[in-house]
View (cartoon, helix red, strand yellow):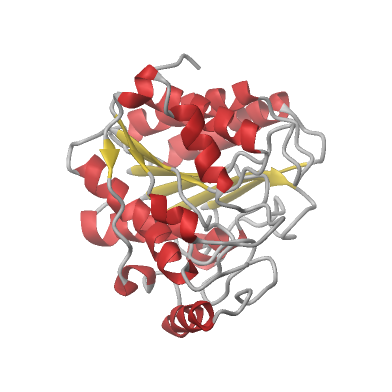
Length: 316
């Protein structure tokens, strides 16, 4: 399989301050681990183009977009909530992160690669229609989903979010829309407080949201059971035309921000299962975007494992 890899030195320009978990070292530490790998050198490297305001406006309120631009430009220390630390460069970097999805789509739909992974920041899945939240400015996965529909004519998109925190923003953006199936595994109850199993969608979207909340201490076997009993049957019934992964690696047992106990091997296993869904229903079209992961060594290790399986360089 040919896996496109996307990153950009400009992602380091989003400065969050001393001690903030979502820091530039997340990218540099991961790149340092990947660089010496012989198989990584063979992956096509795709340039990232910043999202246009029109692309971002497909999922975010224009007033919010303009407010984010003004707040970042003003030198204010945060946007909307203190955990969304920003600097003057943050708005442009957030547009770049939001553009990673359409850039991946260009590579995959253009035949340059079969699937793709974006090593990006800031993450996106907590960003709501009109508010920043949880380190996130724009919802990168949501921008990609709408781009695939509006630009490439794909009708049914599946988003699997395995970040340890529930992707409240992504769920809320699509919970009334049956053309996007959102499913999440996450620690619960935990930040941000959403993601109960009873949240299954609203109105026409009822049945196309699937939450698999996990108690603190859950490990590989619980995640594998959720896949086999809930997630895979639902996705196979839905038959998506593209698969998006909100790929957070903060459910690893060593991550400092939560209490789920996954091994690195579980990320290989989940990646392989989602490749199988994409191969069966979506012509292999799978797009993976980095969300969380705050233990630098484990983040880099998990990204290596994930990329290795995506590209067929490492067995699951």
